[in-house]
Length: 547
Image (tube, rainbow, N blue to C red; front, side, top):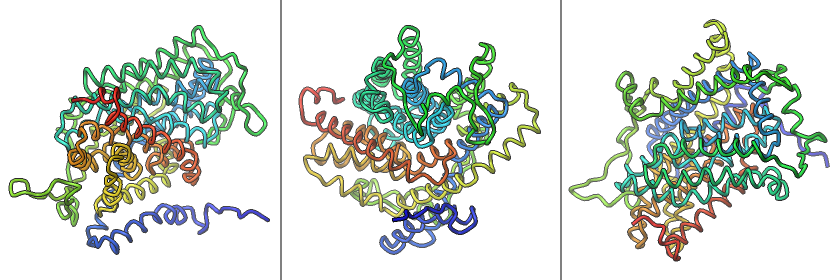
């Protein structure tokens, strides 16, 4: 039987085909909101526009400027040098996976969040020779344990805001759940790539990366707060792995095979660059000065993104320019009802849902990335006109992805404002004694739908607190579990998958990426649920709960 051949441009026009693919899910969500949930038409359309705007800014703004920086380094051949230096530091692709996807990615998660770590690490892995599906999927799996403290602790800070629970208690409780998975994830991601035997060959690197991340994660989250957890833990993990590689190398002779040739060869041989179609192979040897020069753009990126993420800096930049726009036909026109929110009282009536688009263009992470790219461009010898040319080319290159991101975020906002997400959440909450397990999966569902651990915490944090109090379970445990379970949904949400496909230039294969990571997402979320269940009912795990 002749297999059916997929057609990625069925309408004979890339723009129309992309629009149909991107808007199909949005159309279904709007249909459910309008005809099943009886949402007013003007509010539904305003919600879709609000979500699309958020998809373009700040998320699309991050992706656009990050790919711009990447393109600048490609044009000067410095990304090839960087790729070669990483390959020489850790020639084994399994160790590259641990160092780059887990440790290096966690740093970007802590500093920026919003898809930045997946975009950076997926692009680097692909240039080191990983296939697009592997680079995208493995980066998504690796970017799990740090998510709850991403963007300088934003998800935990938001969770404290909507629940009224103590910020440090929530930070500490999540820090008594996630370190277990910070220890597991390096092993897990290598196993997903190389299999059981391949993972055993690099267990010292996995253990070193995991322990050196998990221990600081626990200490900082419990004794300082949520702000610098990922930054400190990621730096410790990277330094520990680099130190290990000074005196240890894998000796099992393992070689990955793809299309009859070891993947690792492409880390040193010239290969067409995925984004430009030009030869960008790294030289087999490069001077130390050239390697340092290749790292400068990414060091600039790290420093500026970190500075942009400091709350005091953000606040100061917001005072300079951060206009707010109330969304017509949506702002204060819808309201969540009990039991998603507490029963209204005369003292505390039901508060309508706000819909305010904040154009904080100066304090946005994407602006920090743009500033880093411009500085790096001057450092690399680009003229302003040349940088403008590369920027326009980058905008044209990612145009379809920006459309997709806008459509996906529009879908997520429609499910939120129409109440369809709350229906699913309430169904999971009505699970009796198994609530600690399924309540954790509720966090997973929230992130899978919205693409953000912060959004999931805002969406379900109050519901988790109310349900926990009704069932006699510590609300700090369950609210933290919403965030900890949510991190495992990050690898299957539409936003993250689109970011991964964009970074690897693998447009149109989002379904393949989802299938690649779905089992891992469900399995890890279930393990978090089991841990939370034990913490709720079974000694000595109950002693870990913040009182």
